[in-house]
Image (cartoon, rainbow, N blue to C red):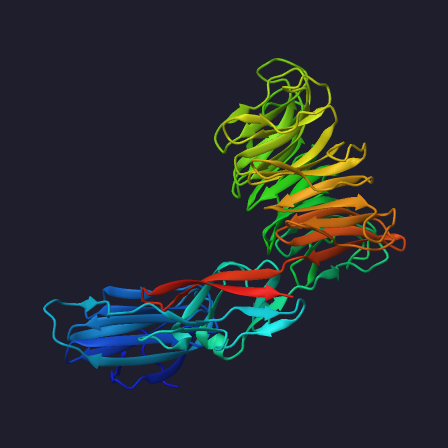
Length: 581
């Protein structure tokens, strides 16, 4: 295999013909670039595609003076493509590595045809049409079964580019299953080609209705869920210790994120990002620190000699409470990490607790405030400034946030009672959602939808019931004589734990509401601590004498969004829909 030349002066001359020709070579080591020379006797439409890469490489088109005319610089091992209409003259194609230490073989396909003479000079992008979704067939399948994609299910065509040049980019991931390319899970922004689909390399793995994620002789607690990703704390693990470790399930496999001899607790998840608190760390202390996993590596966010607790996460933004800070006090303050730097949001002499986060918006409860009282008030940070939402003489607790909407429970209100009521802030005004003489607790929010549990209701009982506010009206989801607790919400889907159910037992079961109510568990053991993301649910169940983590998929349909592009400016958006049985 003869080298193509390492600079413009030594570039290898190649002829351009209408019939595509394939050139194979390699770069790496001392060979940092390959150069090819194109001598065009007339104005021509030229196409070049670089493929079969084992490492990141880029493709450039230069004029006779060595000035870059067009470039294709996609990340990773993705194909590179250039299409242009060129006036007669000398041009160069340059192939370079994305990183000097890499090396790769490659396949370069070249073709060109003469076109009518133009009046300009240099390169003009060739006339190009966007890809067409020729086939986008809805699919019905049984949960838990894999589906291999082919051109009969999803097919894009293009008048100018071939199947290997048509690149799909995922803009929305499926929630009730996983997309895999050659066995590797695709993430948001992941890519595959029409050629991959035609060859059966793209697979959709539907998640089963119920999966047991842990099966060991130790206890597992505090499951949290985001999409099909689940995180929890459990004893033991690969390091054989008895301390609590953090475990991460990505929809198909479980990874132990911590392997140390100290306890790790309170994991939270957003996408594939995870945050938790643990002892020790790089500073060697015994106090609790905050740790952040970004899907590949773990970073210790705090390195101090005070305790940091209650981490929460939204995207790559993290919030927690910790002692000390810039004001030098020993009271608890709120700290915010924006993916790069940490900011102390509160600087006072009173305690601040229970931070929650949505995007760059943060809410918490703290003593004092502008009214000078000692009762607990609600504070809201909008990414720039902090506002005190409540200014009363009663306690306000358990704030939750979604976007700029905030919900909490507090005593008093417009009805003048001393029982706990639910309050809702929509970014500008506060509305009292409950006005009764019974206690209402633990509100949760998703968008403008709110869920909570409270006594009484339409059935007149004194047991705890679940209530759902859809942004305008409140509906009582449960009307029974048993207690229902711990509601969680995602969109308009709700999950909770309650006694009884269709099996007639007195143990707690998991219930799911998506317009109608489904009892997810029907056993004789305790099921509790449900969490929800879309139609996916995680919870803890007692199996024998240990606490185990379970995952449920209640979806009846799924979809993924994409953009298919030809690499030279044409692109088409689409959504593939699936029905799950």
